[in-house]
Length: 222
Length: 376
Image (cartoon, rainbow over all chains, first blue to last red; front, side):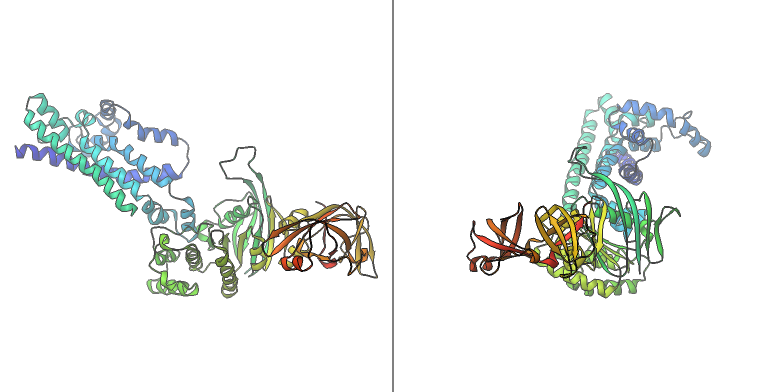
């Protein structure tokens, strides 16, 4: 039983962690650009990043398969480069998790960055600081609450990701059977006890995430 | 260090609470030159003072003109030069100080010392802290500082990188009256000490007169007058400046009658009233406006003297007396002319003479203090 739980739990946390790191790095850059720049096609870019929030996960999964599948534009490049596809691997699950959790990060971080007084940035420029230095020294530290909140929400979303993961990474035992997909298959095969254990663990992780968000934000405010 | 500014910039009022029609929109059009001195930008809110600062600092790009500080060209439209903000090396204290809330005082000051060695940075911070007498605040955060302290920290931070010019945007607006006067004195001393050009924004006349070597008066984006506090206060060159320096008795119905060699004064005719002023700027026939500061009208009892036009002394009746703290504001109606004047006199004086509403008195308009200017 423990062995059965261990793999889905560890692969899920692994996927969520890698996805969250990617979400953090790219999300902060994207949020900063959205918050501070106006450019042609900005609305379209914002739409593209945010739309996974409202699209059904199966639709996202389908679109991702088209994109990173063997014949997809990105999938083709990956195949040429590595000599193997990434469909039905944990990396595919990371892509699915990343896509659905990025908008949560961008929405939270963008709002937080927009709330930073632009005059503080000008003050730093006047003191001789470049834009990147100013972002690192002033803007992002002042927006950290929003960024943390976005990060935790993204992590929680990645942990619970199901639909897109199933389509992109499948549910291969010992390879891509995450918590969510394991619950589904356990339930399907009538293994209710196992499903319940996994459900409880997921509920626990989600509660942790929520209370962590509250605590972090509380602490940062103090 | 000399500073040369010639700029043109379309100004649109930022206040979003107003509807489009009531928003101010004009061309900011200002030229001036200054040396190592303290120049006060004086004008009502929405006259473009802060926009001027934003242009000088590079936050806003000008439409046309040039800005030169010392031997550095900040901006020159013709030469297509627009120095990035970071390279301008100026000190700017924003109206709300813009201290970085997540850094303590030391870190705030250090922020401008990019590229300095560790030792010299430490030294410079200590130097700035002692210059502004805020040594004890080194490790505090902005939220733990009072308004006056924040202002000093902001100054220390602005001065630390040895700027070539210092811009202060209404640095006292958030402070108590008492601290204001004290800090104004300090800022004036500081400017002499560091010896760089200092531009100071205010809409308080008192502050402008107290601080300035020169005052630049702005009204709706246009420079109205540039001169010493005395020049601005006693010789406003148009109606806007006159109103801004508190001249409430303004009459626009006068013309120049003649120059009187004997009394060395110019005789004005304002309606029936004839009036003498101590200036030779005008020619006979010029249409002018004249006015006088309320505190430069002297009230005399009628038995001590009689009406005497060659001395600007007229009989008047008191219409109202209003308390204004230590002073009283008296409204006077000239008996023989259709003119009403407002005078401000010390309260004790009114009590001593037992002046009451309806009394007859003499109003003397000090010849040297009457201001006159050509109409706009």
